[in-house]
Image 1 (cartoon, each protein chain N blue to C red):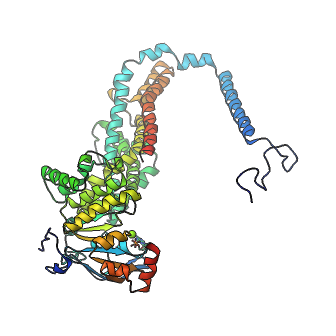
Image 2 (image 1 turned 90 degrees about the vertical axis):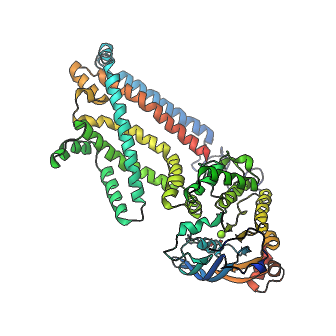
Image 3 (image 1 turned 60 degrees about the vertical axis):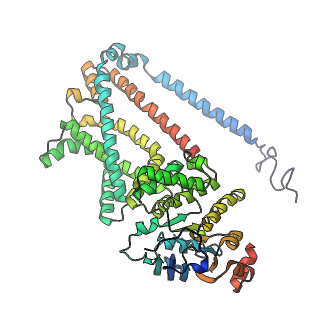
Length: 285
Length: 259
Ligand SMILES: Nc1ncnc2c1ncn2[C@@H]1O[C@H](COP(=O)(O)OP(=O)(O)O)[C@@H](O)[C@H]1O
Ligand SMILES: [Mg+2]
């Protein structure tokens, strides 16, 4: 049978009539047409939103420049600063606790594994808002506990506890992604399990999970907004709390837009970094 | 403690002290599957023993039982007379005396070549940094890669990586070396350099257990050749004898395929 050139027996050329007798389009024509329809739908949707929006109302309620100007510099020196500080504390705390939980979950000792599994399942299964609320109000009453840093401090501890559950799963996956030959090589050289973990496995695991960990960081930045439920002293306010207060003071929603922009200024470079890291990692290996 | 004499020893003269490796009636199962079915095997001090056999015959498993990367199901494994299956034995200490070279090199990819060689010296042998670096440089020079100490493993060819892996094992000053198909993952043109380093080691009197498909190496360098099939040692003896005049029909069948 000839297979090197010409038509292959049994498959009709693309322009031959189909089973229904209708002339079939070429595959490339069909693809171009489909893409054209997608563009048309997109343009229509944009126009529709443009027509339906009440631009006058938007301008006065959301884009009031005087209201926006009034928020500076307070929004930067207090709110953005606090958001960043809370994020860094929660991330470092979550990383430390998450690492311990990941090692417990991979431990040969059963009870460690069970505790870690229960912890991770519990705090990944609960809304972060509820946990923050609980730590700010229920736990202090139940244990007669005065949280360091007041209710903002209690909320932060809750944020650390929740993020540790997610970070633990990420780190565990990273540890398991290190090829077993690495552990075998280290052990065959006489290194103890602990040194093997510290010098060989963890450095490689953290390299593997840098993109998902950066994602965790982005999520954490946004989750600091949940701290508002704890209620905060004026100087402790982060971006969302600050914006909400400004909204009720000014009876205008522009502060929300300004806060949103502030979040994006912080998060967008990080999400781009994640994308870059993922591309870079894929090429690296 | 039995000290290893680095000068070359003829196999016949290697009766002093216990064998470097002695395996008695070793069984190993993975779940239901019995992979090693009663192996008796030894390597004398200063001896080079090559192990050949079809894929899946249990060669790697036997090798890995010697430093207990695999847990034997039953039987005895003595390293320099010390029972390594005894829970009282300091396994990490024994392992510092057994160099191991893997088919896939298993260099630490996040560390420079020099750090690959010094890490375990410092962590497991508790050597100071200066001493570790000096020993590492000596061994890198020995495998012909002194100029690569700052490179990372990914920047090296497979043959260079495997020579670094050999230098890494040698930096622990082991009494013996285990090789698990050290050239099987290499492009053909890179095999020679690695075999040359191994031949040099053998000439210096290193005790070696080498799982390999390189029949030329086994014939010229090996003191003894062991043929394994189906989890048992089928035949062993002088390499020229076994390769030239195999007694067992399974050996004949295997050699007719690979030679
Ligand atoms: N960790 C393991 N789990 C289950 N089976 C294994 C494992 N390691 C090896 N085996 C099996 O044991 C047999 C012998 O393997 P191996 O010792 O690697 O043979 P060889 O090195 O001679 O090719 C093979 O059938 C292999 O599938
Ligand atoms: Mg093998």
